[in-house]
Image 1 (cartoon, rainbow, N blue to C red):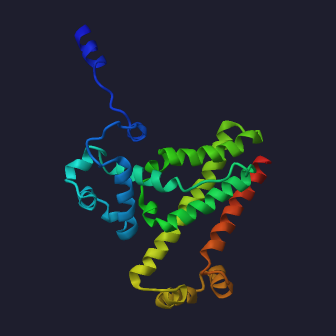
Image 2: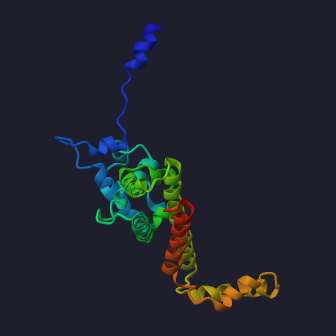
Length: 246
């Protein structure tokens, strides 16, 4: 038994992805680094979409053998995490902004803009999005804006996550609609509605959806996703303020 214990204790624990990223190698044997891998993967995803990011395509873009990249990242989750961390570093709110509402709203608007610039973000698994240094810094900044409002720990986190969840869901839907329109060659909301008119007309003539029909006839902001998003964020923030009395 003692021998087994000694053997277990002697096992080497591999450093995490983020520990390796922050280490400074005094004399690297290769020009291939985690930062270079992340930059190339982001560029590939921006140009060709999430599906284009494979280890083989990435290796070709970097001009290395496929196995060379595996010496730096263990698989797709590591790669996604590096990509998310790299682009999320663009999210920042000045320390001069101290109001909890202003901080959370600013990050919400910036996150939408970031995801629209990098639509592949809508296809990354949620756990990967959460656990990167840049994403943790974004969360920390928002939680810091809430911590002095007299909230218990659970309420503070729930408020933060309510805004984050709204942003993620709303922008994923916006990107999905944009990609669907692009797939069918529809260049405007009017073109999309014209193409879908037969289905919509039938549904409206059934008389089962009078409120939706009223919306379809009266709405003036059908093609203004920025207004719709910011209105939604404000509704969430209003609800948090009302519920928590902050």
